[in-house]
Amino acid sequence: MEIPTPLTTQPFHPSLLKLLSILQEAKTESTIVGGAIRDIILGRKVIDFDIATSAYPTKIRELFPDAHLDQGDFGNTFIILDGHRFELTTFRQESNYNDHRHPAVVRFVSTFKEDWQRRDFAINAMAFNPLSSVFYDPAGGIADLDAKLIRTIGNPIERFEEDTLRMLRAIRLSAECGLFIEQGTLAAMTPVRFALAQLSIEQIDQELSRIWKSANPDLGVFYLKKTRILNKQYPAIQHFPDSAIGTLHSLPYWRHRRDHVMAVK
View 1 (cartoon, rainbow, N blue to C red):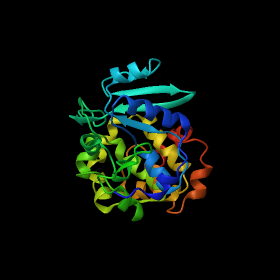
View 2 (view 1 turned 60 degrees about the vertical axis):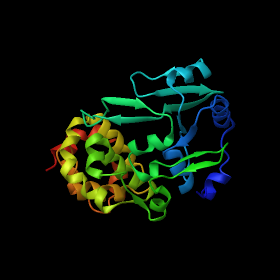
View 3 (view 1 turned 120 degrees about the vertical axis):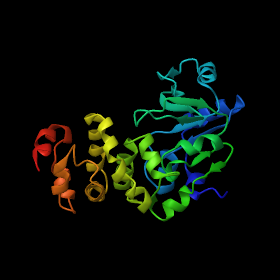
View 4 (view 1 turned 90 degrees about the vertical axis):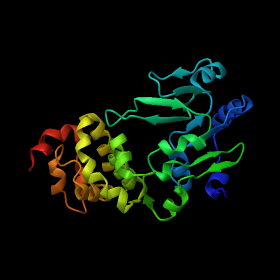
């Protein structure tokens, strides 16, 4: 598969290359995944680099003795290397999302080819290792970026029922990246919106705050109004004008306005 030009010209940080080199020397399959790859291709600034690997958490701790292992069974390990923080996640498969947010069953696997289907959107399922020059795009993320689309992997209703935060994440990514939500993905939000009751107000506020601060907040408002997914939590959103950039940026901080906004019918 042809590697997108932005990935071949990206000056990856020496600490990231050092981390990948250590993992490679340990005979693991490791790759940069998700939002970092998406943002490099889009020409956006990358804040965090996430690495997916075949190394189990115990092996990661052996290779990086000072690594901090996240609590739980999700295979997340945080590493500080040369003053830079990285998140490593063991390749895995997930099932039984009993709370519409977290998997009850996690099984570690050996390759990215077994891992990618659990991810949310095609544009977040791309992976690249700059040392081996191996690029993965199993779900058609490049085609979606070319079409300026956000599309779930597999059945969108199932993906949103697994993790209800994905609905807000799709709208937030649309606002941040200037992308449009694919029709089937968008239509699936309405029948699943009841599951948003499982989220805390703080989780919702965090996504909304990023929408307000994004490059395209009016696009986020358009999708929030069209899907009506937050009508119960924030009915005032329906009263925002379709072109609401000035309105949104004038809100001081969403959490402090919660009582006022929810009182507007």
